Image 1 (cartoon, rainbow, N blue to C red):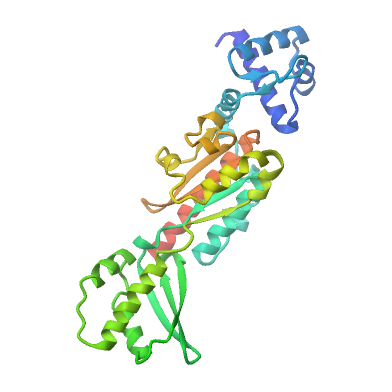
Image 2 (cartoon, rainbow, N blue to C red):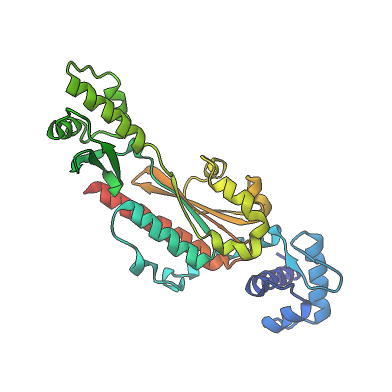
Length: 332
């Protein structure tokens, strides 16, 4: 890279970093104030004009400072990634390792969403593992009064669901629990396939089979994502939130993003986002695994002008630790 180009990109880096910090247009005078650059104001202004022509920055109105474009933010992120080798996880500004929760998976995912949302000041969406492919470890049948029972289904990874049902007249609760024990160790998908061909020759068996089908439908229902932190976007992104919330609550809304991510953290900045509702934001997407099996995705939607050098490694750190936790848990 030529010397003049090196200087120009140093100016760009300074503009982006300062705008992220202050959210105010950056002037040539401000560039010289916040850096150790020894060039003249005229030189910096000339570089800023070239950067504007190249699409890295823009001037909101005459005599104003400059604001980085999506292209300018991408340059900044790419430069920060080149310097990642010099960073250490303990410099993230939050003791994530000490706060990593222990407990059932849904509690863990919720806690991680809250941590990431609080630090990044963005909306975090975590897709939960599909129960369809998880093994059923145990089902408990607990009588509650004379007319109801509670059926607790425990699956691997610590995911569980409680199903309240009306007590079936004539149904022996111990026999019902023994019936469910036949499915221990099978995935929900395998259970569904197996009971579809079940043949029973007693009224009690038919009642148990009907109840099992209802419970399986219940297990497969419910929210498939956890999302936290929408309030962080209210102040600066209020006009874009209605479309964003419709998107978040739409099934499979982020599939287009997920299809572009294999491993590691991928960042879509503004116009790079393939989903129109996300073009006003920066979107971080990272898959998490159990061994080699893809389990779900962590998605962070934030203001575009954020300290990427802090947020990127935090998303990566949480995703990696979650993968390690699930992998170790699966081996027990």
